[in-house]
Length: 100
Image (cartoon, rainbow, N blue to C red; front, side, top):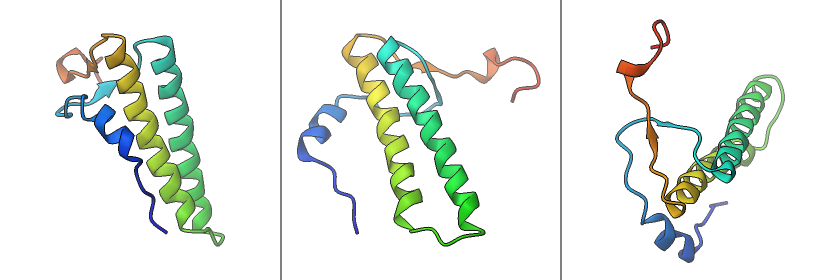
């Protein structure tokens, strides 16, 4: 089974700039909520992957969770973009000592 993108979403997402750096979560309350949902989705993906080492897991499930997390990330960026809030770019120079 192949996941397909709806044609309307491509035009909206094309307005976002490409990524050359890591983006920090945050921005509007809605974008922050989408970032939290993405983190929860990634956690579920990791747990399903761990489960797959011991039990049979339908291969579509981890793939779906991965794509859902990607969608949530892009949606958070789009919400911030629509509100006029730029991406918060992570800078290794500003990272606390011992975190990088």
